Image (cartoon, rainbow, N blue to C red; front, side):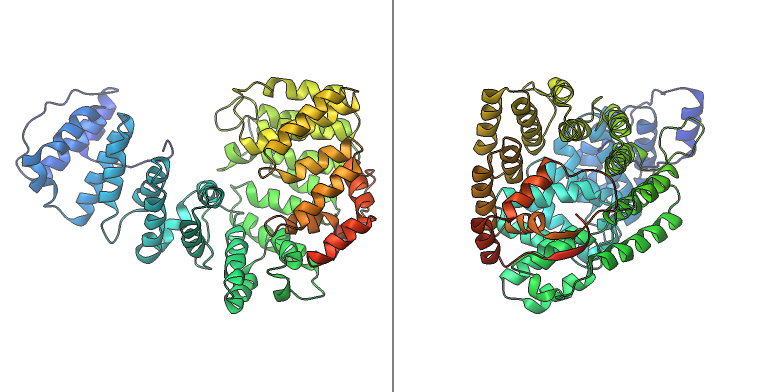
Length: 498
C-alpha cells in the first residue's frame, strides 16, 4: 500500500502546503457537493485524515458526496482510501476501494488497491472476482498490478487447494491481453500453468494456442518434457533459437525502457543460458546499480540484488570464485523488502561456497539466518537447510546433516529437489535415486525432474561441474532411474549448456 499515491490538487491545498507542513482546518457543514469536496481536500493537505473520515462518515452529508460527477465521486473514494491507510483503518480501506471501482472509468490505482486489500484481508474470492471484473471493465488496470502480488496469489491458491479460484485467476492472467507494465516481465509463467490446466481438461486446442504465445525459454523447455504438454511441442524443439528470440525481445524492451534494469538483466541471463558469460557481464555493466553519480533506474530497489545475483552466476561460469563471492556479498547487502540482509543472495552465496569446497565459510554465511525468527519463507528455509546440511556433512558433522535431511523430509512437498541435492552431497546415491524416482512419478514434479536429467550441450566455459551435476550424471546411469524416466515420458536433448 505504500506505493499507492494520489495527486490531489486545489489552490487551498497548494497555499497550505507552501505555508507550513500542516494547517489546521476548521470543520464546518458543507453547503454543496463542491464545498464538501474542497473541505476533504483541505483536510488531507492539512494532515487531518481523522477529520476527513469523520466528514465522510456523516449520514447527513452522504447525498452531497454522491451528487457530483463520477470523476468527483471517485476522487472522494480515493481520498477516503488514502486517509483510511494513513489512519490504519483496514476496514475502511477496502470499503473505499470497492466503492471507487464501481465506476466504469475507475482508475488503476483504485482497482489495484481493491485487489491488494481483499487479498491481504484473506478474501481470496473477492480478490479474484475483482481481477475478473477488471478484465471486463478496465483490462489495462490488470497490467499495472505488481506481478509479484499476482504470482503470490497464484501460488497461494494452488498450495491451498483453492482449485476453482486458482483456475479462474489463471484464465485471466493467461490471456494474451495481459501484458504487465513492468518492463522485462511477461505472463508466460501464468500461461504455462493454465495450458496444463486446459490439457488436463482435454482442451488440447486451447493448450496448444496458449503455448504458441509463450516466449520464455525455460517455460518452453519445461513444456517439451511435460507429459501434459509435450505433444504440442515440436520433436526437434530448438532451445538455442528460443533463447535467441527471447533475447531479441528483451533487447528491444531494454531500448524502449532505458530507465529499467530488468530487461537488461534478462538479456544477461539469456547470454548465460547460451554459455556466454563474458557477454553477460558486459551487458550487466551497462546498468550497474548504486553509482552515486550514475543513472537511477525505476526498478533498482527491486532488481539490485538480482543484478548482483546474475553477475555472480557469470563469475561462477568463468570459474572466478572470489569475484562471485564478492558479487553475492553485495547482493546480500542490498537488502530485501526493507530487511538489511537479502536472504536469497545469502543462501545462493552459501551454495556457491559449498560448490567450491569452502564449507566453513558456507556455515558462517548461513549462521545469521538459522534462528526461528529469521525473516525467511518456508521454501527459502528449506534451501537454507539443504545448504547447511551439505556443508555440515562435508565437515564431518554427520548427525547435523541427518537432522537437516529429516527436516527436509518433514516438508518434502515444499522443496523436493533439496532432498535429492542433500543426499547427493552426502554420497547417498541410493537415497537420491529413490527420491528422484518419487519426483518422476508425480505429475506436479516430473517436469522439473526430467529437465534435470535431460541432456545438454557441453559448456564452452572453464567451470568444473559441481556435486549436483556429477550426482545427476551418476543417477542417469542407473536402471531404476532410466525406467522411471521412460514412465514419465522421457527426457530431451537441448542444444544449450545445462
